[in-house]
Amino acid sequence: MPLHRIIGIDPGSQFTGYGIVEGDGSRLRHLANGTIRLRRQLPFPERLRVIYQQLMEVIRGCEPTSMAVEDVFIAKNARSALLLGQARGAAILAGVNSGLPVFEYSALQIKQAVVGYGKADKDQVQNMIRNLFVIREPLNPNAADALAVAICHMNTHASRARWSLADHP
Image (cartoon, rainbow, N blue to C red; front, side, top):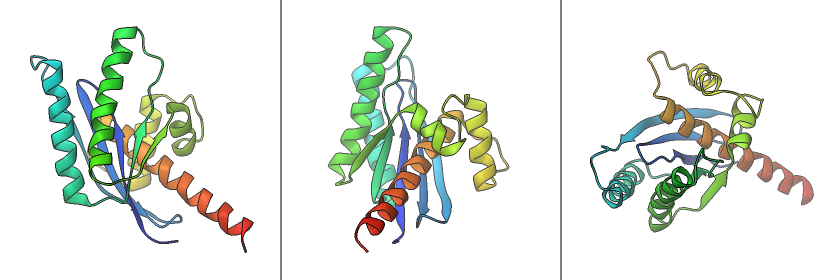
C-alpha cells in the first residue's frame, strides 16, 4: 500500500485541534499536531476565518493526501451544535479548497479505532495516542483527538484497501 499522509481535525469554536500522521497501513508515524486557539472576544464569523486560514497554512506546510474530520456529536444544546457545525464547515472548506478528499467519522468510530472501546473517555484516548507515538511531553486534548481522527481514517482506509484486494485478486 502506498504511503498516505492524513490531517485529522477535531473542530471546535474555541479550540480546533489538528494532527498529521503518515503511514502505509501497517506502520504509522506522527508528523505534527497543534491547536488553533480562538479568542472568545472575536466575533464568531472572525473565528471561522481564523480556523479556515490557519488550517490552509497547515495543509500547505504538510501536504496531506486526505483530511479526516470528527463528525458532529450530540451537543448539550442546539446553539453548541450549531457553532460546532459551523467550525466543522470552516475546516472542511479548507480541505476541499486544498483539493483534499474529506472523510468524516463519529466519535464512537474514532474511539473504537484508537482505544478499542467506543465509549472511552478523553483521558484514555489521549494516553493511547501518547503511547502509540511515544510522546513524552503533555499533549493538548484537542490535538490528541485530532491525531485519533487521523488514525481512525488511516485504519479504515487500510482496511478498505485490503478488502478491495481480497475482492479482486
